[in-house]
Length: 241
Ligand code: SAM
Image: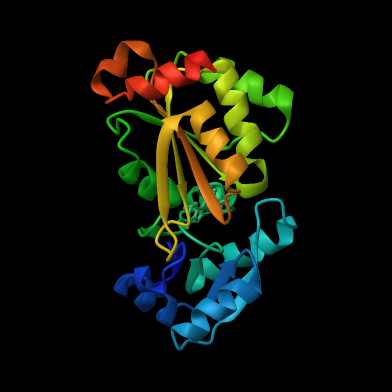
């Protein structure tokens, strides 16, 4: 069937490519992707060879037009380097324009690092706010934390290894008592999820630098903290420090 197929791909473990993802990738006429090398490898692993078209939302309007014209006639898949397209990844403009033109859009669900991290963290999952990448600059970090601090939900951010300690220090400064979780290398061999207050986690990762891909989470504010199993010793240590 013609249309745009949003296809989630593994975030580290190739076993997480779903049967439907494989079927759709097998049947589509072209695959729009962020990086043709990364997607080429995935398709090769799946025993497929497809026409790959590099796409991001800021790419040339002409590329989007070409993809839309194709999707109106044939099945076109959209993938990102890893995980669910559109989640801190390109695709939203393509989907918006496809919908506006009456082109069928369907989503083949699969892994997303934010959901995997949340389910491992032990933090409340009934309400959460995904806020994309944690800001890289000091001022933006402080502003973001001030903005989000009152929100009664677990906060979820994407993070990079080189910035982790500085981000944890910013959280220790703004929200010293909150429970924080760091999830790394999800679905991979060295998967890890560590929890504590930010100052403890910062000390740990200053000592043992984190590698790989990271999701950073902050538990909800005080009134909800009764629901969270806080480690009183850790809180005391943080306060004394
Ligand atoms: N669309 C992807 C998804 O659905 O998860 C996210 C893309 S975003 C550009 C990449 C970021 O996702 C990484 O910097 C990291 O924060 C997070 N991420 C992706 N894979 C991960 C993994 N295996 N473990 C931990 N975090 C991961």
